[in-house]
Image (cartoon, rainbow over all chains, first blue to last red; front, side, top):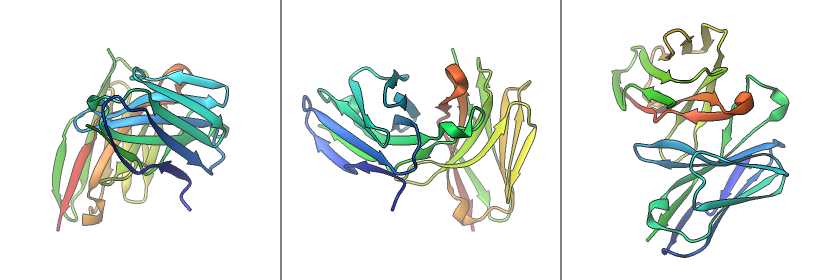
Amino acid sequence: DADVTQTPRNRITKTGKRIMLECSQTKGHDRMYWYRQDPGLGLRLIYYSFDVKDINKGEISDGYSVSRQAQAKFSLSLESAIPNQTALYFCATSDRATGQGRNEQFFGPGTRLTVL
Amino acid sequence: SQKIEQNSEALNIQEGKTATLTCNYTNYSPAYLQWYRQDPGRGPVFLLLIRENEKEKRKERLKVTFDTTLKQSLFHITASQPADSATYLCALSSGAGSYQLTFGKGTKLSVIP
C-alpha cells in the first residue's frame, strides 16, 4: 500500500462549488503539506501543518482552507472553486524525528483538479 | 525577493554522457538543499540532500555540489540512461526553523538512446 494517498485522483467541478481533497498517510509523520503545481510555475506551498494543533499558511493560501483531522489526515478545501484553481495538487509529509537539516518530503500521487 | 532558478527548462543528452543540471538562488541562506525527481503525472521523489556546510554529496550515479558563495547547486547524473529521463526539481529550506521547502520550477531531462 502507498504511504501517502490522495483522494480523489481526478476531479472536474464547476465554478462556485465546494471541493475537498483528502490526504492520508501511514508513515507516522507529524508534518503534512499541501502544494499546487502549475505548468511554468512549479510547486507552490498552500498550507502546512506541523501537528494536529498547528496549521500555517503557505505562499498561496487565499481561496483555500485546511483541516488536520488526525495525525494521519490532512484535507484541503476550496470553498468556492474558480477556474484559476485548476491545477495538480500534491500532499506531502515529513518526519520531525529526523531533526533539522533533513526534512525530505514524501509526496502523494496527486489530484488533478479541473474547475470549469 | 527570494528566487530559485533552474537554468534550463529542458535538457537533452546522449545516453552514456553526464547530465549536469543547475540550480541558482538569490536572497536565501538555506540550511540545506534537496533534489527531487518527478515523472509525468506522479509526485516528486526525494533523491539527495546536501547541507550548507557540505561541498559535495554522492549516491550511486548521482552527485550534488553546493556552493553557498556562488549560491548555486549542480546536480550530475553520470553514465546517463533513458530511464533517467524525468523532471528534476531543486528545493531549498526556507521559513522559520528551515522546515519548509521552496521548489524551483524544474528541468526536464531527456536521455536519448
